[in-house]
Image (cartoon, rainbow, N blue to C red; front, side, top):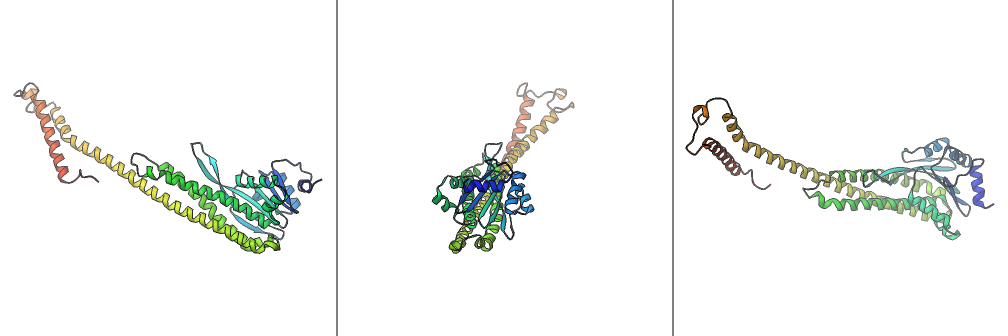
Length: 343
């Protein structure tokens, strides 16, 4: 029996091993165990093999925990939150934070996730398919080194998602200034994406900084202690750059939101201005039409003697001229007040 099969047997014990839920990669006696959508039975088997605390097992089985580090004598338990892209009902995608639970021990590292982490899955599959030297390059000789590698690929994915959001912001920059197009929904979606990414980055920055300074040397070999500190410093630098980029994206999205709001108000004001002018110009006509529609004797009506000096429609012509004169007078007044100047 191979060492990997022996390890599976020890972990699973009397629990039937279901391929796809628990996968194991080994290199120089050091193991990476990846658990996808764990069941209670599988987590109990892992807890029995590695003496995991029951509270950590409970946290690993849930989906909505805060990022944190719990330290024990034999291992460190870490919860990280990373955004993942999910398809929406509408024709776009949205980001949602997903939990990654990690047990870091002396000669093992256990990753547990309820959903699919594509970068993590790709790295694990690459590790499984690689030969001894290539696998050793990925896993190193310690949990601290491997944990850094996992964080590094996830940060790269986070940066990719951030750049995608920035690209989407650049795409809507021109429509934002187009008064005939409303991009309020798209701006709101991008602001939500930025908020999710910033939440993940802020929680990640605190946890990784703490792990790199306090725990990484504990779970590394003597040969790479110094280098490992630099590795985590490099990861923290990448996180800081992603955070800075997201701050810039958030500021840009806020500017776009304000511009879209102001242009929308300007469009509404122009519409109201036009309707107000039209309504105002029709007031004299409505007034005269109301008077001449009354059933009382008014000069020019049938009861008092119809005006006919311009033909049988003289009364209508006079009412129309009076209305036109009042409209022209108001237009002249509006122009003199400067209400028709370009804004």
